[in-house]
Amino acid sequence: MKITFLGTRGGFPVGGQTSCALVEGEDGSFVIDLGSSRLFEKTEWIAEADHVLLTHLHPDHIAHLASLLIARLNTPGVEGDVSFVAPEAVQEYLDFSGLGHIPGWCQLPDVPAEWCGFTLEAMQTRHPRKNKAYRISDGHTTLVWTGDATYSEELSAFCAGADVVVCEASMKDCNLGNAIDWGHMTPQLFARLMNEAKPGTAISTHYTELEPSEFTAAMRPLLDASIKFIAAEDGYIFTTQ
Ligand SMILES: [Zn+2]
Ligand SMILES: [Zn+2]
Image (cartoon, rainbow, N blue to C red):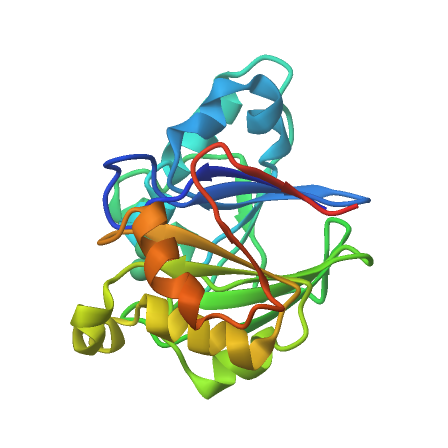
């Protein structure tokens, strides 16, 4: 499995772009969230974005949703509809934006068990808007992508034993109460989740209050030494053998 992180900021695009990544497996690929304009830098990425998994419909995760549909209609050689898997109706969002008539996409009615060469499971996290964490396997690597979430025992159980967990890293520990109220992680909550779930590799993304280096400095001493940790930044590429 290969994960190309195109945007790793949460909330607003200062210091980088907001949430977006390309996930490639043995038999397929998809894009998760649409917060980064870097997706439009390569025609093959626009073409590859015919399967899109959305964690939720907050702006930092869907800022370029309509742009992707328009780009695909206007990019020579790019054909076929975009297939969305999302926890809420993409049509309602496009209707609200006055763009409900744009063709070239569909949304699956639920989270399919098998999708473009991967198996999928989902659970709803604690976040103000309906957010799905996804557990994804290409038959070799199991990846959990939390989207926006605060710690919960349910999320910890959902992540348990995964090879890779990509988790958000929004807030500072001094704002722990706000983080829980607003459905976000802090270094302390991130470490608790990982220490319980024990993935092979823990990856942070979605930085809002802390730079990646600051998040690492605060979180790393709290994390079990057996868990490999990577602070993803824009452009980082993770690969498993
Ligand atoms: Zn977010
Ligand atoms: Zn959110």
